[in-house]
Amino acid sequence: MCASGPTFVKVPDHRVIMSISNDQHRFQVIVGNIGTVVSSNNLLAAITVYWQYVQLALAPTGRASGEEVVFIYDGEIVGDYHLLGTNES
Image (cartoon, rainbow, N blue to C red):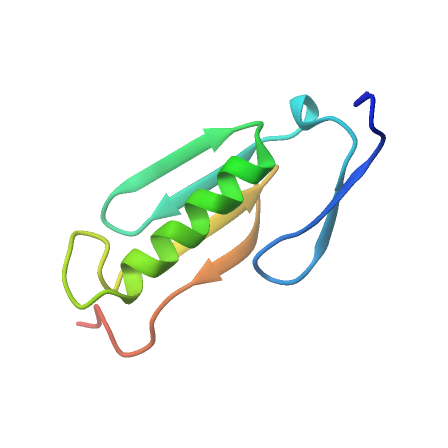
């Protein structure tokens, strides 16, 4: 258990996750054509990277431009950003 007690963090889809010990959980960020960019037990690092890649997805150029960015908490998708109208066949 964390010495400071439970931590409540709002994840990208606006749900609140209670994390008693980050060691008990797995957070992943997956970006379209790049793949997994984070697989960690550090929630704050994963959320930070998620939002960084959302910003890169919004950029007009770059490898992550227009790509889907997915935030996964213990195997469940809790955040999914995709710029509508891009990367469509």
